[in-house]
Image (tube, rainbow, N blue to C red):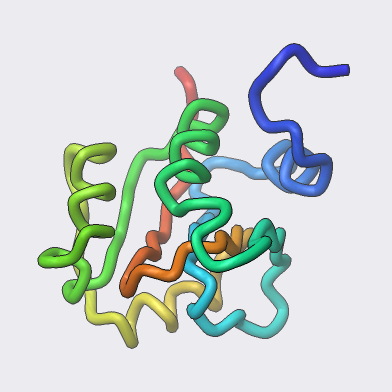
Length: 127
């Protein structure tokens, strides 16, 4: 039994296989799921789990060196959640973000039902 950190077995397994430069998408429940990208679907009902909670759990366990979000998120509640957690956020159109998600190593689907609550995170290294 783990002491803490990520408890979801599927998410834990997927995170353990990530390497430097791999892309991880944390998505709201409405983002289209790209074909061929492994998905850990945590969504239970609208709002559960929340985007921010999943983002916090992941960033506590994984080193991320870059964050990309949709331009459209900048004036949304999701945008505030993103900028409060990452110092430097790159912005692209929502369509480009969906295209980038197709190259991800992992997509984590939350129950978030707030528009534009999606990020593409690039894995870093802890040294």
